[in-house]
Amino acid sequence: MFDYHVRPLEPVPLVADAGSVPFDDFGAPFTLEAEPGRVLGFVGSPGAGLTRLGLSLLAEPSQTGMVSVLDVRGWLCPVAAWEVGVDPQRLIVVRCPDRHTWPKVAAALVEGFPVVYAEVPAGIGDADLRRLGALTRARRSSLILHPVSGDLPIGLLHLRLESAGVRWEGVDRGHGALLQRRLTLRASGKGVQGIERTMEVVDDGTRPVRLVPRLAAAPAGHAVG
Image (cartoon, rainbow, N blue to C red; front, side):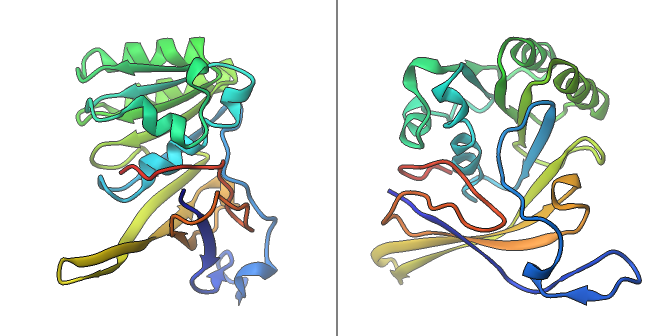
């Protein structure tokens, strides 16, 4: 079992000309969750822990309804979703590596499922993604996008989480046991009141996920990339 602990790394500035205050002194706390009519984005390279974090957001919705994953690399094992708390009986995994077909498949999933986690293949145009975002809002679905490379269009996302670095601890010169993974994230967008925040996720494998200020995720199991 892995445990997420999140802590601020530095004070976060307010809007221009408003000065700055310590992290905990401004704005309302936000919870990372799949919300109806909103698009979340996870940006970062494979191995940064974003897939695990994204799948964990399907856990709670799967307790009451169907959820779907759109896999474009063929890497995703359903067991990885089950281990982060997703109900095996309510998970549908669709594989679509073809970027020409992907927009139609993604749109069909958004229309048919209340929550969708979708990898985005390289070469998908901004216009296709914006149409998918509009459909998400119209259908009151929840969409989590994770591009396999590159970024997502400005203005599409309610909340954008970008991996700013990952560090494994516990192995020296190729020997020893992995003790924990530290993932640094930058959060931006309307979901954080337009103020970029920097957080650190500590994944030490000892306890279930614990809800913490500023960021929360569902109970999780073994890590995936």
